[in-house]
Length: 179
Image (cartoon, rainbow, N blue to C red):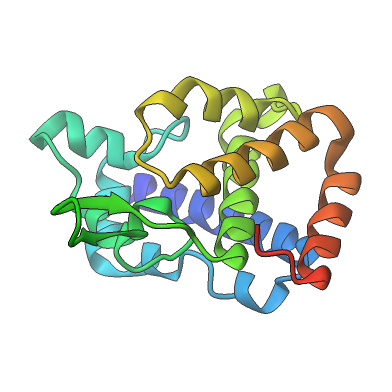
């Protein structure tokens, strides 16, 4: 029961941080719906069972059974995950990444920054999310333009801070720049 309560507090704290970031980025209404599927039974039960507080419980489920049912449920319902944006390409006859719409790239940025803050706590810096992204970049099946925009925003955050990065994002949206 204690792990379930701690998991609930962690996902709620994370969600509230994402909502704040989405508001700063100019997609506040979208942020209100962020990660609601984490409260569904299929995701919450796994989260409570494998909760450790320093990493995603989905990692624990993967270690235990070889895959994560919670993650498969989550990525199929939350458009801010690049894994959602794959489709069959009739030319190559393979599943390939698709370029994400700008508003979901922005939410993905907000999500990554919030996750770094929540899991790293006092060790968080504006470089944390970029370092995490760069460590995984070569293994990600994400559309090249989506990856480039996310990296650009994470570099901007690392070099110029939140205030300038969120101002840039709001201006990009206002200009209708869909990368």
